[in-house]
Length: 242
Image 1 (cartoon, rainbow, N blue to C red):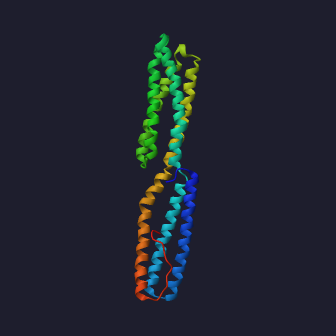
Image 2: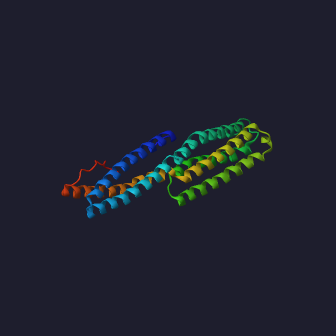
Image 3: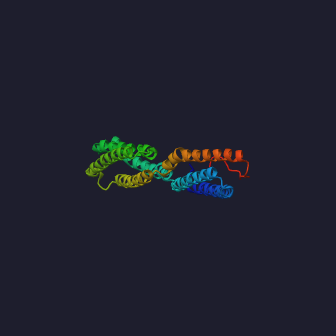
């Protein structure tokens, strides 16, 4: 898993170049076997060709997923832009709370301010598990919790807006603006996280791709042993793991 789009693109290019190099050797091998006209070896080459075709299609799917980097992009938005808006939100509401504690002119604002902060922190804390989650149903549950906390935060902010002493208060306006930006960014985090391209590509690489790669290698090993027993060919060298 690369940490940037540039690295992902570079790795994908290297992987495609390696696959093309091996494809040339596969064609060379196929040509040599066809010249020998041994049914058993021809059958094994055909079997390998099917396996190799499956491998290349899966590999291209994995590469196309990996270069999108949606999980990493979601994490970056969460840890930078969302974190910044949460800080602005907290600072604005804390000034309202501190004013209450200092002059006791608007004590009714303390509780809803704390409720808004608590709800926003809980939403922020759910970014990470959502980004790391691979199961759609589990992501549904996380999003339901986020929606519930969002409702609580908005309700608390509405309560603050209804307090006469906070009418036209700049800190409250700044808090509302910061929270609105935070939730817009949160929705983008959830959208990118839902695509799950990094997780899907990793799961395919560690699961299905390894299985198909092993099958291809097994066919080649058997073919090599058969050819060596015949002693009639000079085969190209093939890299293991492909």
